Image 1 (spheres, rainbow, N blue to C red):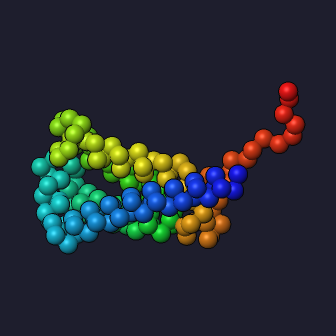
Image 2: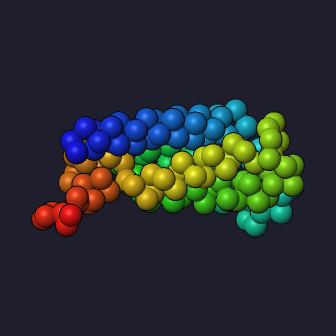
Image 3: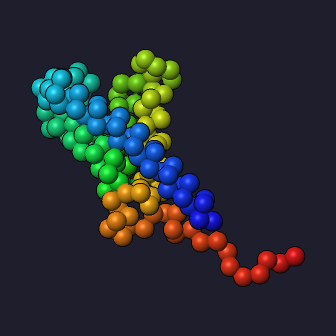
Length: 150
């Protein structure tokens, strides 16, 4: 049982590292390359309400949520925020372009499900959440005790 839990915790850490890296890089690109005004301008073309505020929230979600995911700090709420971010991205930009990249929704779909996985399972043992005593979902699963009927 300990090996299974260790493998699950390692898997959660690897998913968090992948998600965190992707979201930090996209948030950083929006902040440092495109800029707040550029992101707000793009959101205006999509009909997103209050584009300046939405742009700041988008950048904060990607950059901040990605950093939280990398650390495994507040990983469950960060996962929900990032999943919501991908729902908005898919519904406003990618769904109309079909499944496949470069413009389809396959990447947002993958990020959405991986973010939901962390939201559901938690950050795992190798995280700041675990250091603060937030129990990973893998500890909450208990094997049945007692005798097994023949």
